[in-house]
Length: 63
Image 1 (cartoon, rainbow, N blue to C red):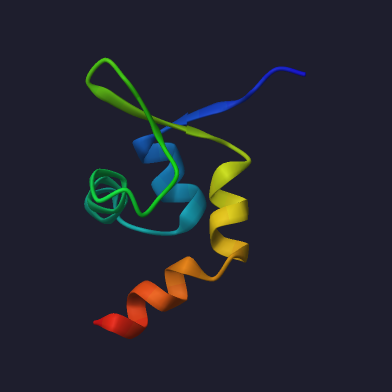
Image 2 (cartoon, rainbow, N blue to C red):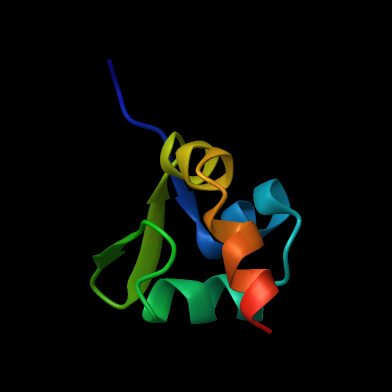
């Protein structure tokens, strides 16, 4: 099975977040991501797992 990779703008659209939020979460290691050269890439399955784990809710509660 081939892995589908998302770039930041695609991940932001999928997660219904701003690009800057996705960049920040990726840089802080709070969003599962892989860096390829200077670009962040997201395995299309990982954002689903991340959302279902409730990690987004716990981040927002801290604010």
